[in-house]
Image (cartoon, rainbow, N blue to C red; front, top):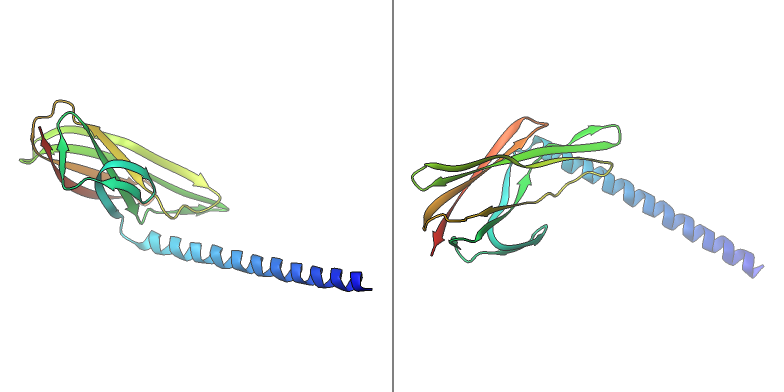
Length: 172
């Protein structure tokens, strides 16, 4: 009899735990949908646009001290595009953006243009809420001086663009 009572009690506790887990999962899904709705209404932009010596992963990078980069090295950049549009069709979430870069002198003379150097077209059954990107540019034989690095993000689904310009100095 004790064994039957223990099994019933265990089954009741397991059912309660699973029911609670399902309710929590539903709440999380509902919150994700609210976040997507806010992001879809928000303005496309950049967060944490940072010149780096190393990029490790999302939110994990080693920023340069200042805006100086040694000649002949590689310029590394970390950023997070914000408010990318998420399209929903059935159980599929879709985000798609591309990124261009433009390198200019401090006087505005264009030295390099790279179109769609990044193309992120992703479809999944779980929404992507946080995205980061890295850029790298080999400075090669760029002479010492002040330059502008422009990143242009194109949200392909919402058909909007955002720009960010970062000045940096190449030093010997």
